Length: 512
Ligand code: GAP
Image 1 (cartoon, helix red, strand yellow):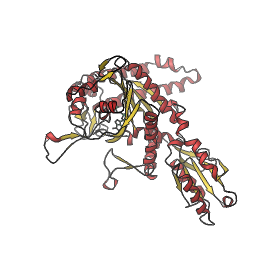
Image 2: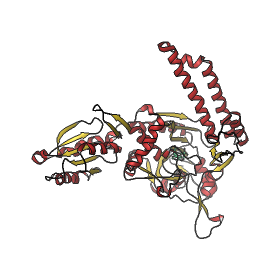
Image 3: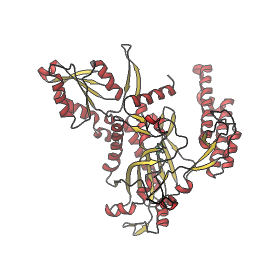
């Protein structure tokens, strides 16, 4: 099965089992907007709890807030979003399709890189065990030509985008001979900037003075509350403010399921530090955040840093934590050293002093900020896609299993009476009533036990217990483990502790 087919089948699986639905599906859907179903919301809440507790509960110098989505419109002028939060767009005149010009170019570069990898595969086949990949990459004329081309296009693209030279961006598309994937033609319009913020009107009068925006990031809600939090919580620098919440962006090229959405959730933390100490904290947060990802247990090779070569004018360091999604390594989290840009801008635009008096240095200053910003939906996708597995069993049967990390699984335990009679359902419900106080459980008495196990495998339930006639005699149950499918007989009174050991956040936090 190709990666593309696998991705399609996991999207279908997410719908079939109530993880994710297309928004407004009965009206044929709303593009790039999704609803989380009954299991999706549980998984999402578990991810949020993991992030929140690791950030806020375990760090005495970080507190959380929940700011409003609507904010004063001047905030977006101060932050630069009204003027600079744009995507460069280009239309194909024949297909009438609209594209992000930078994405067309990035896809072109990716194709060149794929060509290089194909050459490597060819070389390996040709030279067998004598193949020296490093030498081949440095000497093969086809590889060298492709590498040179990719470097040239990347450099011209960065230059053109960095200087906002839209004519140069268009020229590069022409020079690369990029055709519209739909019409196949090279009949392109000019490149234009398109602002990504959604706007609406507040109050009853609908003129432009009432224009407000749906926030495109949660971070600004933190910046404008800096003094409120610092004073009321008596925080001393260095300290952080964390927030989980919705953000909205009118993404033009919305694709790859919940990877790029128009309404999504962010988990952001702004860490306020003394000017001059920001790069030390930037390194600190890089390390801490990577540990947080690794502790989930999807595999350390799935993550990598991608340092930004070209920095935004307000940043003095920036990196992405990229994840190996089914469509390649892509950004999952951004870590940015944003200097004093945001607080200084809000000080300027609001006319209010936004400073911190440092009792250790006897100085007042605008703090510098190191930000960690992770997409909740992308984290969901990373975990979901890595856990989705189609397996062939020794018996020749196939099963679909979601190998979700147990602490994140929506349902921790399925309680299954072997038959629907002889008092077994009553005993099963009694056991479940006791355990459901601590963990999310599901009761299922329909169909054969094998079918019920498969249903639980498909939603990632790490434990199933079966209640049978022996339970009546000695209060023992069969516990079955999702990943190994092994079964053992244990006392019903032990089940809670067995689950606790495997799903407790304590074990995960020990790795941080
Ligand atoms: N405050 C900084 C900020 O918003 P960003 O890199 O634009 O930085 C941070 O966004 C994270 O938000 C990204 O790493 C990504 O995980 C997530 N994100 C951004 N745009 C998204 C979208 N359209 N759909 C889903 N997640 C998105």
